[in-house]
Length: 597
Ligand SMILES: [Zn+2]
Image (cartoon, rainbow, N blue to C red; front, side, top):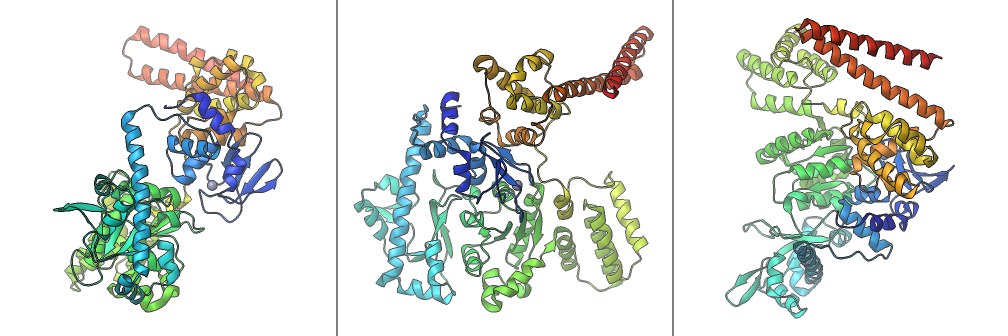
């Protein structure tokens, strides 16, 4: 950690969570909580709450929770140091510069490139409106783009000149080295020359709306058709999704992934404000993580040509493996989304979106297309391929329903189909393959399962939350359950911190406790604090929890003994284990009668 705990705590205290959250979510008072629509999962009735007294947020829908740092990290997609910096700025607290020289240099360079990009975007935008930009204006209006769309996306024009931009930026004080580092220039025989010439320009925004790079498109048939900024300290192609800065603010949690700028822009113009694109790169794992964070459902709407279909297969595999719920949009007549909207209007496109295919449907369609033959043996071959697809699909209900459709369409008995699929399932060594969860089973799964926890975590965390809410119980709890006896993965970390604060300062709050916990662990703690951490009779609750923890430990011990007795050949050793077993069982029944009594 770069900064001291005290500084971090000061930043937290000086940013009231209600004020920060209100900047993103409309909150209304309801009892001692403020409530609103959760920004982390789509919902129509509010289950997101902010507790001003405790300075934490918690969603009863998706179980996300944390303090003001976790809120900002989640909503702005930031790492902890960035969230800290942002909240320090907000509270006018000056953070010391990071110690590391390399880090400091990099952050200075990023700032410079960001400012330079902003100035370049202004230049391109002005050039589009100027006399030299007439052809570009005509091109964009031929593509059906309206004035307000051009403004929203900051579209511009790079003049047909070797160094118009470079001269402009150098006159503003930019060095040739900076122009190069920003990817705006390359070196020519007489100094830097513009990378983008005679192109329509698309600023590329990061998720927070900073301009990190540019894409340029030619207006005729020349090549290359598209040209993007190279990777720079500020821009990493594989991490950005074009227009994600807009999509994340939408009310809709159905994000549409398309191939290029023009598709994104025309979809937004048609009111579909969740269209995004990966630019100049195949779809990446990092992009999947971003989508997982903001989308409840991702619809892939790539072009209908074979390159687009191959990209679809790749993209859906990555998204599915990342736990996203995925559908595939197939645009009729081999069109791309931009063309389709221009020809048929946005209503028809929305209708296509509503009827996008499930992964299973799409995988079967791919087989159908690959095996179009009508002869009997062609059909048999296709049905066998379909059985392969079905057998690798996780959801039994969806499998069964699809089989009955296929049986009707291809006039084969359900029994025959089922026999083939079952054969494959057995061969795969599993009745319900777990690797591929279907879109439906994902929807039925609880949204957040939290971090990896073991069976001790729940009871131990509840105990710690009771303690966080009622510090007076410290003596009693630390006596009955000293630090070294915690066995949960998350609770252990929390216990160490809480015990230390209570020993040193005599007081500790839940909100402070989660300061430097990663978001998943913080959610787990806040979940317990909000749902189980307040009880009428804390002393009784503690006795119950301690008994429960002892019972879990005894169950584990009993299992361990039984396993060992089975594999132990030495008679003496087995007798000893038998004595242990009796002791454990006796203690378990004593606990049981204490519970009943
Ligand atoms: Zn939620």
